[in-house]
Length: 539
Ligand SMILES: O=C1O[C@H]([C@@H](O)CO)C(O)=C1O
Image 1: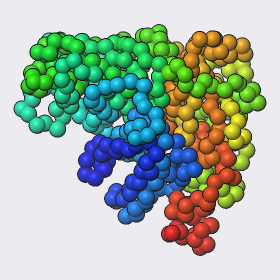
Image 2: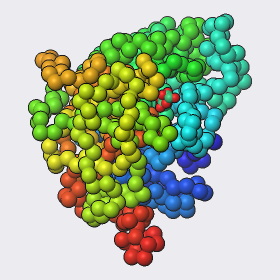
Image 3: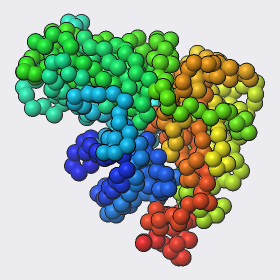
Image 4: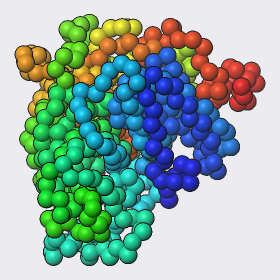
């Protein structure tokens, strides 16, 4: 089952220029469920109600209703959009969103002759409804690894294009007749030119690695921020991240080349996804003579960390402000059981979204909408042993939020830990809505007082990102300025993990906002308040 947009999957590419106001009219033609669309990486400054997150920025758009998203894009870069209700993203609600530099103003700090957009995703045969039931059942049923990886919605399942290069491959070779919907994307290039690949990962689960056979790439942008360019053979990309890379078509022009995308960070059970770099005037049906690049060993985390550490801010861009130790939030990520269900918890609290959107509840002071006691700013017990399965005595489900002082500088330490299985800790890419943060550093083990020195080392320029990974048994330190009035989710971008509670909500400066548009408030307690009689308000 796929959720499509305008009859297609993935959704249409949206392209805009810096300074544009983007208007998207979303009509919900699903028969039995609501829908919202999140504009991933767009700041939504002064328009937090158009962030498109159910329970946080708005009520879902009901079947038969139409909703107008209207927001300004103020930063050039590679973005995407996707469903943010239940697990609708995984069901196929996504598309790419590209913001180009405006006609005036800043120029990109690099040049290229053409560009391609590669939206990466993973695909299951089981529906998200079956998966949601399994995840909330006792016994717990995990979604397991995807059946396919997709590039712009295209991939193979019971055959492989790579099999011709590897006679021991597990799958038979696919036979292409021409025109198949699963046929790989073809990137038509001319020799001796430079191309920009805009890569975005909207995977539900998989951490990916992308490489182009025979070509190095130069990384120039990450999550809509220019980075200090560096050359590499391949790029790690976690769910929620975007990158731009440049490559030059300087290889033998009589050949075509494979782009391969494979799984990292979990034991791979999914064949690589492929796309074809077609040097014109060769025919696209000319198979590359060299095999697709091999994806690096899935659990070579030293290699992954080395890549992540190479992402640094472009020279001359704003460095992080100095620490303001008034607020340092330590977020311990653990897998727990609550009443027999398997969940993820942050400082022992597993997030459960309330029926009334936080933004409306905050703006109109509806205290009954969510728990008013703030969640803990640090681990429940400073002696917590991150190397062992949780002792798990007191994890709870909750919906309280972190309220930040407007314009304050906040440090967050994301702390990873052992799952419920011994000797197991997993990758979690954390995505923050409404903000970019500086990635101050990554560390192994438990964050200790004094570890700040590791990320305050001179000479490293922390990059601005909106998504950052925590490595198994490690920590990641972030800094951001709470300068965007609104309520914002900050969560693991692995969709079943958020569904299992792996996230928090932050809020700041809501008092500075103009009135929240009524059409975002038609449910829960705000719905009752505005209709006066408990029926949904229509405005
Ligand atoms: O949340 C998860 O649950 C499973 C496993 O930890 C328990 O079955 C898994 O691999 C996850 O990422």
